[in-house]
Image (cartoon, rainbow, N blue to C red):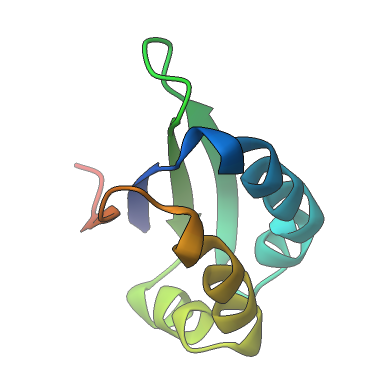
Length: 94
C-alpha cells in the first residue's frame, strides 16, 4: 500500500474553479487501476489550501496514473491556479 499526499495552495479567485475540476475528475481518478481511495481535504484555517490523499495498491499503480493522459489533463488545468509550489509526499503506512 502507498499513500500519496499532495498539498496545494490556490489563488483565492481560482478555488471554485479547482473544486469544479476536482468534482469532474474524481470518479475517473478513483477508477484508475490500483486506486483504493481518494479524498480531498480543506484547511480549516486557510480557504485556499487543499490536500489530496490517495491510496494506491502499489507504487507502479501511482506511477501509471501520474503518466496517464487523465493526470496530464487534470494537472495541466490545475497547475496554473497555484500561488505556491505544491508539495507531494509518497508514504507507506506502518
